[in-house]
Image (tube, rainbow, N blue to C red; front, side, top):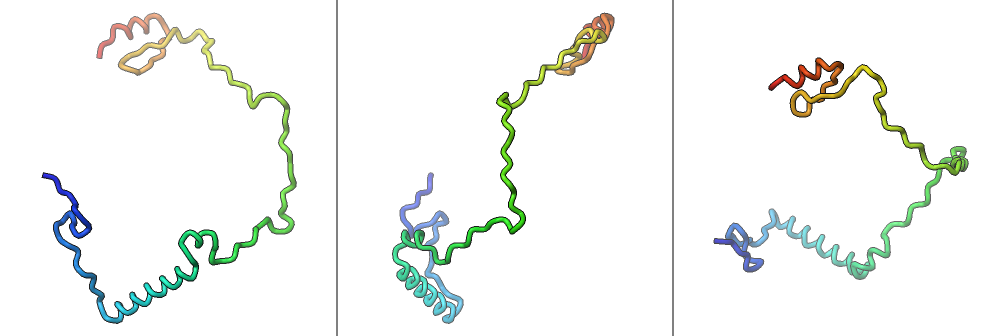
Length: 125
């Protein structure tokens, strides 16, 4: 069984929203006064679209650096060559390591002699 909302008077809990009650008559009077002030304020500025084009405050002056702190224009150097040279890939050129073996899963182990390669191949888990 699924629950459906059939109108604004129903809620998912099955209870209707009751009438709003203020804590005191003074609170009710203050709320009504604020609503009335808000409506007059909205009507004095026209529609809601025009309030975006007419800001209520004056614009701020454009700020700049304080006197004596102006940075002179320094052009960047253009040599005409590319951005940077590509670094060569590192290659082992020595003769100490014979190769790289795998002991278990992805554990790479350097092999220094043929005997180590034989020992590594005979090892089990």
